[in-house]
Image 1 (cartoon, rainbow, N blue to C red):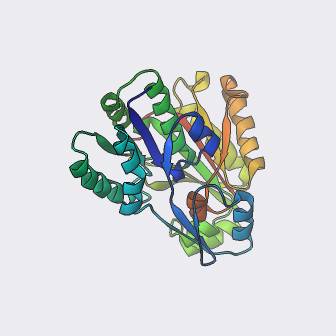
Image 2: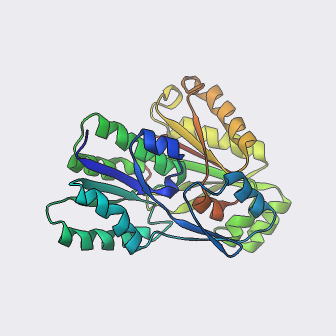
Image 3: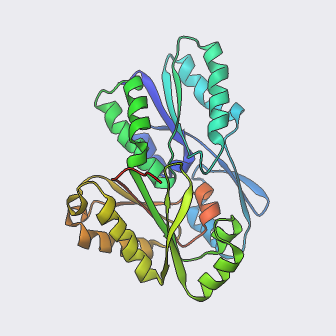
Length: 293
């Protein structure tokens, strides 16, 4: 067993069973639904959450603060464990700042322990796929120092492509202007977005109609995945109350990349990321060409 802990935030959007099976520890963000506070720990039914949003409920999120990071890290340090913690992309959240402050405080208290904080430059189940790959390497015997450097060297090879059929929440979050949201909705425009090399969400194309954006997302995987049509690595999809759209994307991918048939794993977009995307979002994650812009 490794002499260190592999840790992440709840925004990695894998289910608790997966985290436990892979021995990945997590610390939870918070969300607010119509003024009531909750932890992003999976206890609030995800279907009810998205139904509430569809019914007009307002959501807010708050990141893990320094004290919470200290409470999360300290028991592992007291048990003699080193820590490698990857945060949600700094292009989306400032939580890495709180993690770094907590680590600095704890290094003074535990000078013999290693506490590494790494910016994942990833989000949702893309972040989860990165963590899962790190768990593979940990289980194969990679030490904490080598694993830290591997994460920093390869994190930009984790591709994120996603689309939404409802621009309301991107408008609300400032990702899309109100005018663009109005005309996009009227014309049934579905933007295709990705996460760039700095971890920001970027709109890359505007497609008219759901079938077009689903096909475009699958085409991006064919173009960008390692070995193209022969890609046989891990592929995750996360979705927010639109499993039918996720299944349609899977069908397109399996047609273009036959080795993926029956191998794509689907997860829910959790309450933190989902507070900003809303229902109707599908995100695709795979290993491929390095993000350079």
